[in-house]
Image (tube, rainbow, N blue to C red; front, side, top):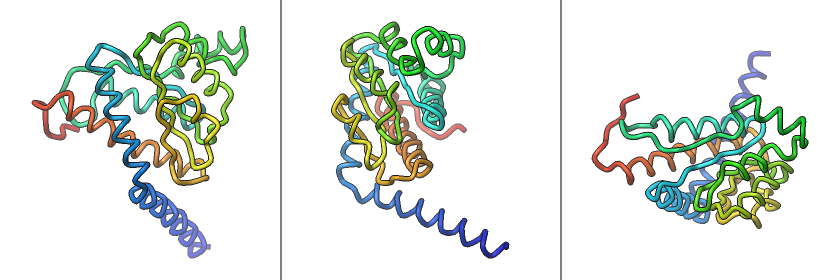
Length: 202
């Protein structure tokens, strides 16, 4: 039994490493990640904020990323405005109850988003209805839309200014790639916006 479990663990880790290596070798993935850094830096420099949305594990990723921006990743620096639209249970359940769960992000973006803000919309499938509606609401309000999805998540790409495709069809592996690249993006935003603050303090 132990050998069988060990083999399954090794297989999973090998596939995870293979997908990360695939992302590293994908110039479009690297280039898009760099463009995301540029967009976030420009928005934050001009007093705009970041909104983040996702379901399930991607909701956790949205909250994780917001925490890195609003608190810190590596550097002691000023907070950067980032709001995960998944954290207020009263708002989420009120909208879901009154309008339906498909509208939980759309309604918040319509109320909180301003032109020039950035929406980071996360969906491993690219087909989550509430994410697609949120993207449309963001476009209607003049937000810049960045999508994080998986290899086959093209349904959401049409509404995004930039869409980052993790090279996998496995939901947990896609989520691993999303949070890994998000750490890189946040670190580069910190470095660019706060060049006088350096050193890892966690």
